Amino acid sequence: MRTTTRTLLSAVLTAGTLVATLAATAPAAQAAGAPLPPVNAQFDYQIGGPYTPAASVGILDRDHTASPVAGRYNICYVNAYQTQSDDTTTWAGGNSDLILRNSKGVKVGDPKWNEYLLDTSTSAKRARIAAIVNGWIDECASKGFQAVEPDNLDSWTRSKSGGKQLLTKQNNIDLATLLAAHAHQKGLAIAQKNTSQLGSVGKGTIGFDFAIAEECQAYEECDAFTDVYGANVIEIEYTDNDLSAYTDACAAQGSRISVILRDRDVVAKGKSGYTYKYC
Image (cartoon, rainbow, N blue to C red; front, side, top):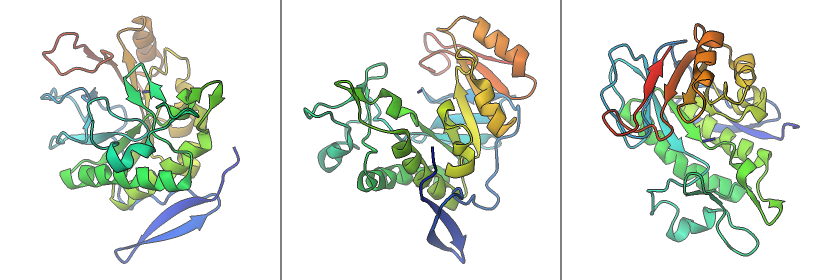
């Protein structure tokens, strides 16, 4: 949940036909009219389970299996770089080779979330992963979401096994570029999730439209997002860090960007451990 630009794929919608073009430096073309989240509107993060949002909530983020809420700006969550712990079918069978494995054939996991990393190391595998994730993006668009949030963009930082890093930042940039082009073709905005290491590449090369930054106050990296996206940043701090991260965030940038406090498991309202605050 937490470089020199190579040739990238951008997409242009012309007369209803998607025309793939290669561009050395241009980001994936944004679909005309893809709306951005309202700046500094109240945000609610519901990826752990949907519930009725407060009337004051203007931006809502839910899993792609859930439905958007009319009258809100709805962001659709997809786990694009790792498996979901409760999904036992997507990456099984003929897709099992898309899970990253070390030299001994052992799956490389993110033990913090009981998830496995997806193998973005080759163009062929990235294309197959994109085909699956783009199917979820299609689902988001058909349901009426306005934006998509592909999670675990920084998975390469967790890809070490046997002293060797198996994925690179460029591997994940290349997959992100495919996803951004598809989201824009569907009329959706797309968020950069975390990954301060991208600098301006996220917006300028990949084509991300805004950022969702978890714990950027706790990690003292919020400027890495606001320097690129201005006020088009949504910040989430968590209760298992010192509360000062949230209160400091409210004081530092709460008047300019959306800032919330949530429990780490982002459980639905009414469940044990649920916490939600907004400033």
